[in-house]
Length: 431
Ligand SMILES: NC(=O)c1ccc[n+]([C@@H]2O[C@H](COP(=O)([O-])OP(=O)(O)OC[C@H]3O[C@@H](n4cnc5c(N)ncnc54)[C@H](OP(=O)(O)O)[C@@H]3O)[C@@H](O)[C@H]2O)c1
Image (cartoon, rainbow, N blue to C red; front, top):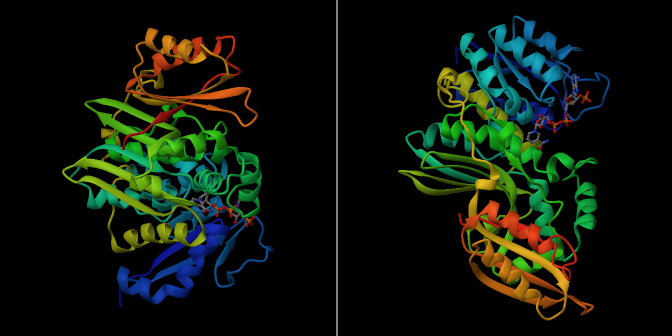
């Protein structure tokens, strides 16, 4: 092999960084054969040089300040595995691109916030910015959209994009333990951070969705316009009733373009249990893609973790080694459209409503009258007494209606004297 080696520098030797070093150190020969040239790590940087790590960094130049990597003339590719939308990760990215170095990252926050301007900067400097690992970890969804599905008009992507939430919802359903108990277990197993809010409030999934929307629809990355609802309000009671009605509850990130109406949202959804995505349990991620001419496609796999995420980082490095460059968001940044996305109140779909009320005659009639007033057509109703017997859950499944009507109905139902608390509303997703 006579080709010039590709020299990379890695900033951030944590979970993912260690995984990348390990793969290059143990699979170097295979990577060289497949890329047609050797891939060498020449420099690394992390916060603490004295920290004990599972990989040997002895042969590499050490930088105390990761941003200095961007000025090292021996470096062809900067691999950023630190994290964070701003600060050092952003500084490093900007400097690397300006200095004509390719940039690879797993940092969804950085790309969801600054993707459009960084893509432009990369083009201006004739380098690539690649972030396969930022969305759904080991599932090669970005490559699938940019390469295998490049001829398709994508109409919709629905994804389980956060392994922590999927683990929690699965564990609640399987063990019958409540949200707080399962969250604690997820933290003990290392699936949830000590501050789990980014995951359980849907922000992490929304970062990934913002990136997918841009690649699928040729729109400017627009994280701010995503409607985000996490899983804190999902109770064991909802999971049990959903199951009784033939559904599973999943946190989905959904982007769609239906006849020029664009929507992007992250929210818990009821999915018919026979659908492939409903069967994706535990920490796994999944993507359900609809497009023309492909039709429907499902991808499932590990959405996080050292090996899976490092595998995606290496895939981007391999592309660069082979000289396969593509636009960051599939088309030139100058062609990315500033798109308006519909407000969630305009959402149209079926809904699940759970109303907790005193177990008295006339409550159900009161609820159905309100739904009728708001032109909400009911598909089915279930009434179940609570364990102690004095209250009842009324579960309503609606036909397609507008979210605006549901909001009005919920406000009225909440005011019925015998209704104990605000009804729980979950959207039903027919994938
Ligand atoms: N973990 C996953 O499964 C996963 C999956 C998909 C995407 N990602 C993304 O991958 C990136 C890295 O995640 P991770 O899980 O590997 O994080 P991590 O284990 O916390 O590692 C972060 C690394 O960055 C270094 N670092 C932090 N601040 C720094 C600074 N100011 N200057 C220099 N180095 C600094 C840390 O240094 P020290 O080691 O010296 O403390 C550490 O090595 C993030 O963007 C994350 O969102 C992670």
